[in-house]
Amino acid sequence: MTLDGVLAGWEGEGTMISRDVESGAWIVIALHSTHLGPAGGGTRMREYADLAEAVVDAQRLATSMTYKFAVAGFPMGGGKAVLAVPRGLGVEARRDLLRRYGARVKSLRGAFFTGPDVGTSPADMDVVGETGAPYVFARTRSGGGCGGSSPPTARGVHEGIAATLRGLDGDASLDGRRIAVQGVGSVGQLLVKSLLEAGARVVASDASAAVREGLRGAGAVEVVGIEEIYDVPCDVFAPCAMGGVLNSETIPRLRCRAVAGAANNQLLEAVDGDRLRQRGILYAPDFVISAGGALYVVGIEALGWSEERAADAVRGIGDTLLDIYRRAADEEVSTERAARRLAESRLAQSPAPAA
Ligand code: PPY
Image 1 (cartoon, rainbow, N blue to C red):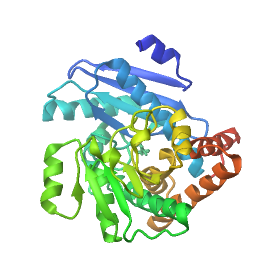
Image 2 (cartoon, rainbow, N blue to C red; image 1 turned 45 degrees about the horizontal axis):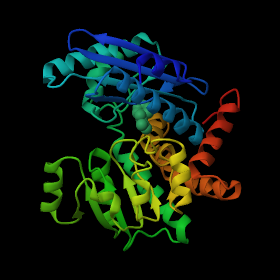
Image 3 (spheres, rainbow, N blue to C red; image 1 turned 120 degrees about the horizontal axis):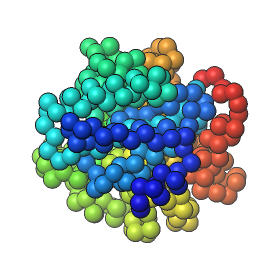
Image 4 (cartoon, protein in one colour; image 1 turned 30 degrees about the vertical axis):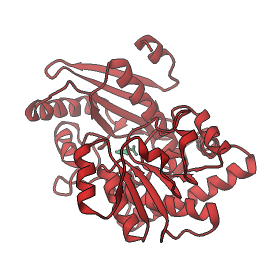
């Protein structure tokens, strides 16, 4: 798609694009909605084929953040930033880019809050925060933040998988269940660990051959190739890598009873939610099950919550999913559509409800 088409076709509030001349990176900040509060969302850093692809990614991720906060009843809107970097960016150049990016975030004067995402870490947020404070969340603990969003994201997904199993057959126990995890990155590896501790049998894959080798060496999980993960017979398929993995090519191959994982934007198109429903596969909408990091970080750093209260919000993801599964069954729609309806009803309430 052309950049004109991408920018014209989005229903969000605005997309800001700036060129970081020194590094050759593009800085894309997409603000989808500030209706319920300032737009919050992580900063993704990776290489893209072109600027249009980076903008589409930022916009889709920003939209998902609006839904994520709305379903959770948080006074926050949805946004996302993408740093589309050139190949081979050096450590120093990367750090300088993060500092200039922080200044860009600060120039928005609080319309956008950010934190880590794919390709950035809490330590990176310390650097962004040098110029972007106070609009930078999930810094390291020594940097004054809550230490990152991956652990609460993984905890929320674990709760969500258990709730999804309960939704399937009334039993939330993970003991003896077979779970296929796609992507063993910062969230996926924590999820694999907690699933194993709960007695699940884990089959895993990762795009990196080195990561697959490491997993094989550790011996606790069965490792399959990146294409084979879709064909694994299992109770739950847990996408924890990139978006768009549930589509007309992959859905017919799935041999799972449910899909419940951490990745953002798992469905390539909304109709893929219907495809899953037609196949009788229970789908945990990604913007619900992956919200743990956002809820924990925003709860603690923006809303002044205690760790206990934030942990309760993360645990609540399980009940939220069960509520959505009931609504979907009652309304005879996909779980994706039921979750969107719930978010849209919250967005229609004005002023924003207090969290
Ligand atoms: C996500 O859940 O995908 C996020 O981007 C989490 C988030 C939200 C707000 C600030 C930092 C990270």
